[in-house]
Image 1 (spheres, rainbow, N blue to C red):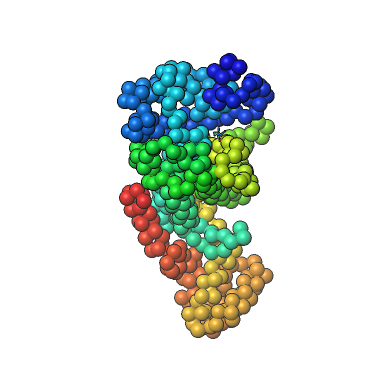
Image 2: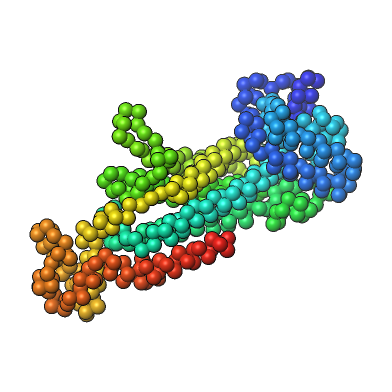
Length: 465
Ligand code: ARG
C-alpha cells in the first residue's frame, strides 16, 4: 500500500494497485506529452498567483519555478522519462517536481484540478496553432498572388460541371483561391478569440474556496478574459471542435486545389507542370511522373474530416461536467494540426514551383463555343429579350456542331441569318480576349478587375492583413 501511495498522486483512498491493463488503457502520456511546455507555462503562472495571494511563500515559489524550468530543460533535451503509470502529462510533471524539490512541489496543485489544467494546456496549445496556421495561410495566399501577378493577362477556360464554360484569366482563377484561403484565415482568427479565455480556476468543476485571482493568471498568460461558469469550463470542448472545423475547411480547400492540379497535370489537360522535385515515378512504368503531393493532400482530407467527426461524436451525449471521455479529444486535434499544417506548407512550396502551359491553356479556349454567352449578351444589348437570345445562340451552336466549326468560323452573312441585329463588331465580341475583357462587373474576370484584385491583395499581404 505504501508503494501504491508513493506511485500515484491520487493513491490515498486506494488499498490495491492499479491493474497493468488499466494503466495501459487509461494513459494519455504517450500523446499528451506534446503539451509539456504549455503545462509548465500554466503551472508557473498558477504558482505566481498562489504566491501573490499568500498560498505559497516567496521561497516556495522560487523553488517551484526553478524546478519546473529544470524539468522543461530535461524534456527539451530528451532526458526525462515519461511514465505511463503516472497517466498523463500533468501528473508526470507534478510528480517529478515533488521528487525534485519536495514539499513546495506538493503545494502547486492547490486550487487546481487536472480538469481545468488540461483545458488550460489545450487552449494554450491551440492558441499557438492558430497563430501558426495564420502564417501558413499567409504563405499560401502569397503564392497565389505571385502566380496571379506572373500570369497576368493569360487566358484559360473556366469550367462549370467540368465542361468548358467561359474564358477567364489564369490570374482570376488563382485569385479565387486567394479569397478562399483568406476566409479560412479570418475563421481561424475568429476562432482564436474563443480559445483565448482562461479556464483555470474552474478547479474540478465548481470553482474553489481558496483565495485565488483568476484575472491575474489570465494577465500573465496573455488571455483576453476568464471563463464565466466553472461547470461549462471543465466540460467544454467546443473551442477544439471549432478549431478542427476551421481546419477541415482549410483541408477541403486544399483538396479541391489538389484535384485541379491532378487534372491539369494530366496529359489530357497539360495545363501545368509540377516541378520534378514534387513528383515521383512508377516502379514499373518508366514514363510516369505522378502528382503524388496533390493526391496525398486530397487523400489526407479524409482523416481530417474523420477527426472532426470523432470530436463531434465524442461530445454528443456527455453530461456536464468533466468526463474521462474528454481525454479522447487530443489525438484527433493533434492529427488535424499535423496534417493540415504539413499540407499547407508543402502546397505553398509546390505552388512556388508551378508552371502553367499558357499556350495550351489559351488553345483550349478556342473550341467548345466558350463565347456563346457573349453572343447572347450582344443580342440583349441590341434589345433582344434574353430568353429569345438564348434560343438563337443555341440554334447557332447546333448548326456549328453540324458543320464541325466554331462560331468564329461563320461569315458575317451566316451569323446574320440568326438575327439581323448582328453586325461586324460581333467578331470582337466572339474572341476570347473580347469576352474576358467585357466581364467588368465587380468580381468579374476582365483584366481591369483582376488587376485591381491583385493590387488589393498585394497591399493586403504587405500590410499583413
Ligand atoms: N488526462 C486527462 C484528460 O486528458 C486529464 C484530466 C483528468 N481528470 C480526471 N479527473 N481524471 O482529460
